[in-house]
Amino acid sequence: MFEDRFDAGRQLAARLDVLRGEETVVLGLPRGGVPVAFEVARALGAPLDVIIVRKLGVPFQPELGMGAIGEGNVRVLDEEVIQRAGVTEAEVAAVEARERTELERRARRFRDDHPAVPLLGRTAVVVDDGIATGSTARAACQVARAQGAAKVVLAVPVAPRGWESRVGSDADELISLATPEPFFAIGQFYDDFSQTTDEEVIECLERARAGGSTAAASRDANNDPPTCDEDVEVQAGSARLEGHLMVPEHALGVVVFAHGSGSSRHSPRNQFVAGVLEQAGIGTLLFDLLTPEEELDRANVFDIPLLARRLSATTRWLRIQRDCIGLPVGFFGASTGAAAALWSAAELGAEVEAVVSRGGRPDLAGPRLAEVTAPTLLIVGARDGAVLALNREAQSQLTCESSLVVIPGATHLFEEPGTLLAAAETARDWFVAHLGAPRRQAS
Image (cartoon, rainbow, N blue to C red; front, side, top):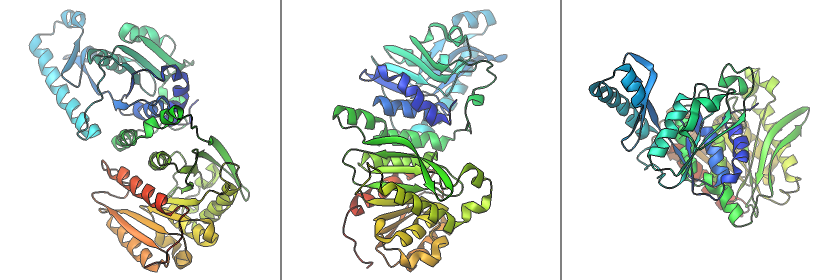
């Protein structure tokens, strides 16, 4: 039913379009609900935040909820359950103290000192990746209302039949795209239901703060929709490669993403970077370098000549698409995809106007490095020592204009708070400066 949580979010956003223009805040339930909520917030042009709740379980029967707590010292108690279970005030206080410690730890982890988005007088859209028992979603709705939301909407991609009775009146409006039968678990309705990490939650929030969540609203306000925003299929030799092309109105150029180490167009990190580029008026093409069958052979991931041929074929396809004719083209590569980007850039010459490598392996393009003419930026984490050394050596072999930027505190995957945003903004500035600009020789 859904490719992944981002796909589910895009589908759910279409259903929630009636909320556009309201004073809306989209609240994702960590962790799995946040990628879904990100796409909803982006489509509605609304701020994105997490809603962090902790259920208060009866001491001798923790699965039985007697209330919930949220940020801002919000506490919602079910007096009927407390009375029926015979829980004392001291016992309630002890459970709350323990759960509040965990709640505050999670808030610090996800927000990194950013304040919560205020809900007073606004419509709170609580989003999760699906409903199973509904207990956490109920608690989130109760907390949102206690924080002053004028209206609470609970929206999910999928839920079991009869789920509305489980949530009751805790939300003013209940929305689920589907209620299929049989329903065993939320994950059965996703092609990719891999666990969402804390780092992916933080990336979504950072991207929203950087403006990713307001892109759609800004374009609508200016009557300036993208000229192209669609799934595409590229014929590269005998392979048919799937991708997504987004070209904003008056685009500065188009950046083609070369994923690495078996990653796909659904990579949350590359999607994050793409969003930052799109906000700067740069089109993006995220596509799969390998077919699903080819991905089963791990050797293909490190077949740089094969990946480069695919990238070159895709670039030539891109340049004749109606919305891309005449636009400068750049490459963004990660891991082994960076080697493919440099190899292909050497082959295509003037057809590629800028290259950026993030945490890449440019050394794997060694035989072609000296032939690259496009200005090349190498971005590496300061704590990624081995790859940093490989990038320094690769830069010494480049004869084109080049730069090496080291992101403080970052490891190989840029999972640390703020590091991926720093890398994305550095890449954005490089593309803005070099797409369509005259080339300079290496100094």
